Amino acid sequence: MSILIVDDTASQRFLLSSILKAAGYPNLITATSALEAFERLGMGVSAADPGGGPSDVDLILMDISMPEIDGLEACRRIKADLTAQDIPIIMVTASTEEEDLQLAFDAGAMDYLNKPPNKTELLARVRSALRLKHEMDKRKAREMELRHVNQKLELAFASLQEEQAKSERLLLNILPEPIADRLKHNPDVIADSFSEVTVLFADIVDFTRLSASVSPNEVVTLLNNIFSRFDALAEKHGLEKIKTIGDSYMAVGGLPVPRSDHAQAVAEMALDIRGALAGQMRGTGGLLSVRIGIHTGPVVAGVIGQKKFIYDLWGDTVNIASRMESLCVNGRIQISAETHKRLGDKYTFEERGLVQVKGRGEMLTYFLTGRR
Image 1 (cartoon, rainbow, N blue to C red):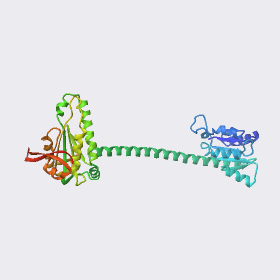
Image 2 (cartoon, rainbow, N blue to C red):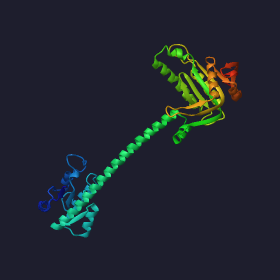
Image 3 (cartoon, rainbow, N blue to C red):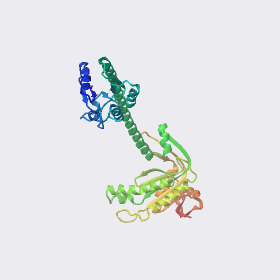
Image 4 (cartoon, helix red, strand yellow):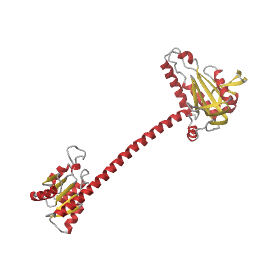
């Protein structure tokens, strides 16, 4: 531990140094003026600077009466300096006036000594000041350690929040938000019955043949471009994308949150899909074409399994919607009589007539042609 003695009188510096050295304080630094003291303290220099600074000084003995800058002003400047303000200062003064002593305390001094100093009193006050500095350093070290721990905890918490946000976004890319919330709180099987929804299947015509004539990267890029448009349309019309199977896209209206206009919403998406692909080139020549099938009826929807789970639909309604697509004419939108009934007079249709549907026999179907 080091003690800085600041006094413009050589005899006073010698006296203080002699007493302190004899008492076992060998690390003494002297300064003949306030400016020299500032330099010794490294005022304005980081305490971590290896060249020195306030970390090298544990106590200052400061004369009050000095030329240019007196001890009171020097004390004020030291206490105003962030790198030196924690160093205790004992003022050494010849004055016994209470007003002068009050000025010393107001300037930031922790104690004072009268000139000439009494050896016993000097050593007692120095020991007290150094104990105080030691306790302050320990407290500061604890605070710094605590800040460091808090910073690490904050970083860890921020990292955890970021990972949770990523997981949340990933989950919402797989499941509808209401279903994701339920699954987080209850990991059991989720299954709900819906008395009426409208299911859409859309399939890119001749995509299998197209994929054989281009590179895998081009196939994936083309599908991503097309299905990204479909995703945007599903979101626009408030529909739930269920899945893609190869070049087939499945969406539904009316779940997981029921809505009365599910058939109209699906019809709007179907018409927009046809418009979105108008003029879209395959990449190898020719225009892309899509078949769309729509059916309305009851389904069961839910999440099953423990790994790679998805939100899926089951029931005859799904099968019929799929048949509406597979039996559709290229470039058309085929709907069942049930869907036609719910769409009413807001749209234009072309009656196709009876179509043989596997597992259901003949069914009356229509082509959705546009909006009125």
